[in-house]
Amino acid sequence: MPSKPAPSIRPTVSPDASPTNSARADGAGIVIRLQAEPRLGGAITALVGASDQRYDLIFPYAVNRESVEKTIASKLAVTEGGLPSLEATAAFEWVSEEAATVTIKIGQKEAAKTFYPLGRYRLDVNGARTAGGFEIAGAPVFVGAVASAYQIARLSTDGRTFEKVSAFADPYFFEPLVSPRYVLASRSVGYCECDATFPKLSWVYDLEAGKLIAYPAPLSTAYRGTGSFVADTRGFFFDRYDARGNAYAIPGSETAYPVRMDGTVLGVTLSPDMRSVLVVTGAGQPGTVDLVRLELKNGARTTVAEGVQGVALPNLVSDKPEPVRFQTVGSSTFFALWNDGTHQENRYAFSWTDNKLSAWSPPVSPESWSGFQASGDDRFRLYANAGLYEGSRKLPGTEKLPYPMQWLPGTHSLVGIRVDYTKQPPEPRVSLERYEAERQEWNVIREQLPEFTDLLQPSADGRWIYLTTPD
Image 1 (spheres, rainbow, N blue to C red):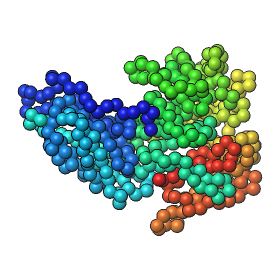
Image 2 (tube, rainbow, N blue to C red; image 1 turned 30 degrees about the horizontal axis):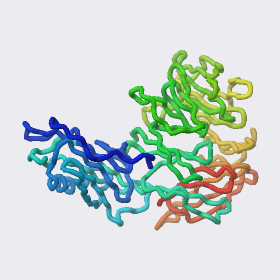
Image 3 (cartoon, helix red, strand yellow; image 1 turned 90 degrees about the vertical axis):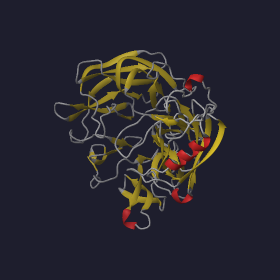
Image 4 (cartoon, helix red, strand yellow; image 1 turned 45 degrees about the horizontal axis):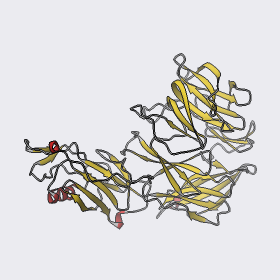
């Protein structure tokens, strides 16, 4: 949850805001926002929790309370397209003639545990009357897409202990970080049953302290954007300035380092010792990139290579440009660029020891994605499109291993979620399983996990496996 309280809902009303010469009242200045997260509000559709949700409703003029309450109640149901409507009720606490808190409650029978939104309701005051009898028009309409809150749980690697470590009331999405104590949490400022992308709200969640730390800027493990950004050695990046050029007020941290580069940054990754970054910029000729190494503490720069052939890999889901993504193993970082002429990957390896860039030849067709996951000692690599390798030797029969999985620290064991849909009804069988690379065999860690459970990350000591699971 945000660390600071929600702004007061008692508005300042100017005399000019009251409608006087029109049969309708302009509703453009009306505020509808979620109290638990005031950044979610206005004319949007947003994912909200299945628990009771409280909204600030603020008018720039006095209104007829009864008219507002009846109008909202009559429009709560969403009947057109997409998700089904929910049986919801609205309760009102009036602060003044211009402001109220609206509490939306859905029936327990609606609050099922599912990965998908349960349905929708809307807050719409258009058609309500002001205190002077004018009809409100042009007000924003907020639509809540109700989703179950997912929790973070941990399971011991022997499968004996399963315990939840969070108690979120709101729906967050989680992403692992290189620092295993933390994960990224996010909520989308928008929702649809489509492939559209929306801005996101970001937090860092401390698994040990059980604390959400709110950030005003979107956080990402793969950055693409302006040359003014912040690298946090816990494994994420974010812009230093908002769209208006104002610096973000970020939480204090000893792990955050501001970076200033010329031009557009197409990708960035941290060094194994977390003391420097490798930055891919698009300042060169079209179809090429430049690579720069930058020391985080003193800003010293080393040009690694200029005019490197290729661009960021294409986005297969939307038109949003993709950042360059990296995989670091030992003292080397591997990445691929896209060759628009050949429609193949150009693969590269960067050595942090001698600052050299060289060609990389993984055992994957250049037309296919070269992504892989390596064991801690790099003895084994699991390729998304080639199976499991021990050094240069392919282990037979591993082409269909699930991807991605995660390596347990200090082992040659992969862990992953297996879903057996042949066990329906009433639900598929969900289990966490361990694949021993040396023996090429599966072992079940725990069966009968809740449906829609997903793998997050193992702990640094390899004793626990963190999962996301329905509440």
